[in-house]
Amino acid sequence: MVRQALVYAGGHLDRAGPLRQDPAWVADQLAQPETLIIPVWRSHNLIRGLGHNPPCPMVVTCPRDSASQIVDAASEMIFLGLDTDTAVFAADLSDHKKIDVIDLAGGGEFVDLRRVGPLMEPREAALMAYARGILHWHRHHRYCGQCGHATESRHGGHIRFCTNPACSRETF
Image 1 (cartoon, rainbow, N blue to C red):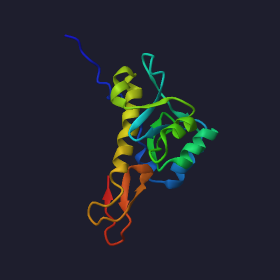
Image 2 (image 1 turned 180 degrees about the horizontal axis):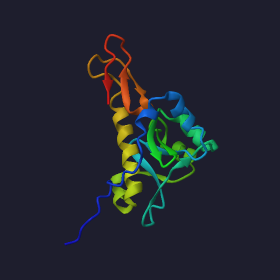
Image 3 (image 1 turned 90 degrees about the horizontal axis):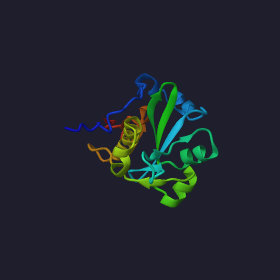
Image 4 (image 1 turned 180 degrees about the vertical axis):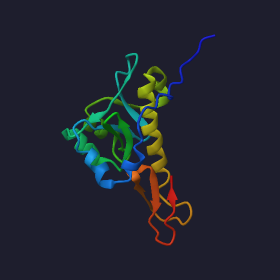
C-alpha cells in the first residue's frame, strides 16, 4: 500500500496572537527587509516554474519597490504569522487585472492551488493554502451577518469587526 503525504499539513508559522493585536507592531513588520508577502489573486496563488517538479510559490520580500506597490495595491493585507523571526503576510490583489498583478510581482503565473499543491513541498503548500484560505474568508465576510453593516479587519486580519456601534459584532 502506497502512503501519500498530507500535502497541506505542513503549517509551521507562529501565529503570534498577542503581537498581532498591536497595529503598530503589525505595520512595523511590513518595513522589515526580510518580511515575506504572498500575493493572491481571486483565490489563485502566484507560482513560477509550472513545468518543473516541484513548482515554486512566488513570494515578495520587503521593502523592494514591488513589495511596496503590492502593499499599496492590496485590498487586504493579512499577517499570517512568523516563520522563526520573519513576518509573513498575504496580499489580496483580486481587485486588479491579472496581468498587472503579475507584472507588479515580477513574473510567475496565478494558478489554482489544487492544480499544483500536491506537487509542492508540504511546508510551502500549507503556507499557500493558508494565504488563499484566509483571504477567501475576508472577501466573503465584508458585511456583518447580524446587522448588514460593513466590517473591518483587525488583529492583523484574524478578526472582522462590525462598524455599526449598536452591533460591534466580532467575526473570527
